[in-house]
Image (cartoon, rainbow, N blue to C red):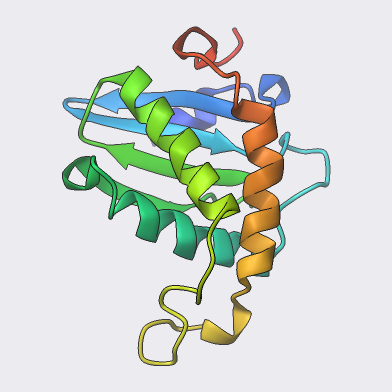
Amino acid sequence: MKKIASFTVDHRKINEGVYISRIDGDVVTYDLRMRKPNTGEVLDNATLHSLEHLFATMVRNSSLADQVIYFGPMGCQTGFYLLMRNENHQENLDLIKETLLHIINYQGEMPGNSEIECGNYRNLDVALAKGEAKGYYEKVRNWTVETMRYAE
């Protein structure tokens, strides 16, 4: 069986940050790594789920909404993937940072916080999402396009 691209990256060399994971035609997959892999530190399910709801809602309501394909968690619970139909890495990095700031400053109800809208709506907490966004923003606020490559 052919090995998938994400399994070819040496996870021992990945730190917290924003990475260009892969480019498939006009689709760019960004790795929003919030925890260093294999350290035992992972995002708990409530934080992962809460941040997913807020981030996905906000990027799909941003100026680049038509270019957002997907935002969702990694199974290993160390971050998220953002898929964009836009190869302008600077614009996408700016969007990531702006979205984190919007989450940090968000006042209101959790989007999708009902039994009708979500399969686990009781597992959502705006404060958890805001706290994680703040910590991650501090790690990536000075991130540049030049630092978005995985370590060799």
